[in-house]
Image (tube, rainbow over the protein chains, first blue to last red):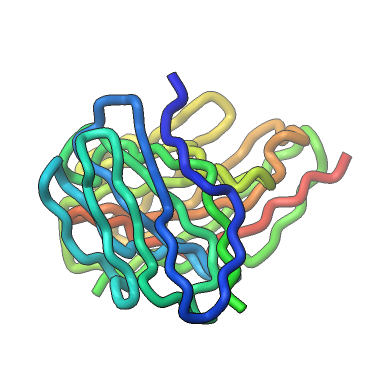
Length: 114
Length: 112
């Protein structure tokens, strides 16, 4: 039981490049989330998927797209990376459709855009 | 809009002593949840404790307990018998309507 896994762990991009961050959970959770964490700030929600087949914008969705590929996997795509997207990205999942339940986090992806 | 404030960017405590981390929040809702998460250097977010707003009894998990003051909108975390492994960033979070609203974090240093 690996919990929530993320790939890659580190990535360096040039401005304008695209990439997809992968996230998978093996806990049969319904809801999945993508956050970013910037220095000196708490996490901010980018997108979430309350259940398979649905996605919704969070607090900071601009510049990102997501895909809930199936119940296990939730990917985050940067179409044209910008230096402002340099951050640590966390994927999380929870059993219930609401965030009242525990959220389990992956180890994070450190992304640098030059 | 809901906000979460952690006014202590950094705290230090001697090993085996007790430390309290502060968190205040602002909301007009009556039904919500509050959480404390720990983030060690590995960056993994680990849930420490949670509190349902409708429960008056303060949550406890082993050496971790909270002091929840709903009227004052305060949610502090007490760590008893501090251990070296407790060194980490601690984040307070408010949960409602699909979202967790996060504080900026408090870095906890444990002195041996």
